Image (cartoon, protein in one colour):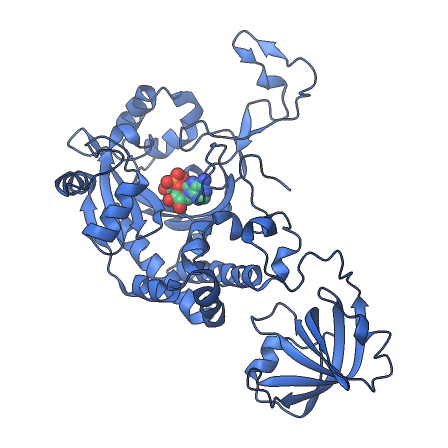
Length: 462
Ligand code: 4AD
């Protein structure tokens, strides 16, 4: 029979009843007449305290061999605890060890271990308070993402992982091939002959589901994707992963204003959902991971987003007289020091920056009438920087064809995308949000590698 969840026991009023629980031992303390075991089953932040009397028939050969990491099944009477720290305890009647754990080699003993060391133990770190809390927060946020879009009538679309198009046009893609790399590669006049590869063409892992998302929006109206994306950029920072999950809504018959509003509503909803669904996890993060993260989240959930154009943003940065490492000027990509200054010093809250120079943005963004900027937007948050990138898309066939050529991209490779502009084109807009960055902000975890189960980054795969 499935044991009960410890979370359910803490939430219920039931006392002096017989229950069975299973979990992993966190600690054991022995006294003369009994042992205290703290066990955790991953369902909540709290451990359940087990009292194991020395009179139990298997006390010596089982209970006294329960070290941190061992798995157990315990049946007993659930009681209100006398101790100040615990509200509940289980007076054990039977204890069964399911799996032993060697105290000499188990890496998660009593002493605290740094996150960096834990990153080398991706298979065990979920048994720590921090990583279990992150995993539960991540799950609650993923659920909230679906609820937000479903309640607004957006259709969930699964876009392909393997693709032949480079959405961002930046060439930062992982190649997918079955060509034998230890043999000389088949060649034609221009280089590797991908006609002989598995798909008969060069294939890669997707950097974004946007292009396919756009095709679905131009038939279904409002859609969203939520899937893995891959970037082969050599960014060894605490905000970049090579494999991350992206949420990408796309709306037909919508412009940049609509896009900004959706982004603001969506983020407010995500911050509120974290506060509402994970109070214990957030209290833990606030105490142990980043003091102040709870107040930060409460503020974010209630702050209206300031909106300003890129041109205004650069002007304000220039006017500030602040001594930036990179002097701001019109035409530059905003650096994280600029993003932080804008959100923390100038606006004191989240900012949506719009209408960036076309030279620093992707080909699909709609050209503005000024001939210099595109209808792009980035959502920036205090302390953490960019969380969302999006735009109104270029829906005019002739303009898009010209831009592709200007940017050195081959229009023939984007023929499906161009067809959307040939047949019943519509104004449309969307954005992408890196899910791990959202989890990072809500949890206060310093490094993005600690908010995904198996982080992938340059030189890091396990
Ligand atoms: O600004 P990006 O590159 O936009 C796109 O990919 C668009 N196609 C999205 C769209 O309009 N549908 O990425 C969007 C977001 C960023 O704001 C950031 O949150 C996240 O994806 N992101 C990363 N997160 C973790 N690691 C990386 N290497 C990331 N690169 C982008």
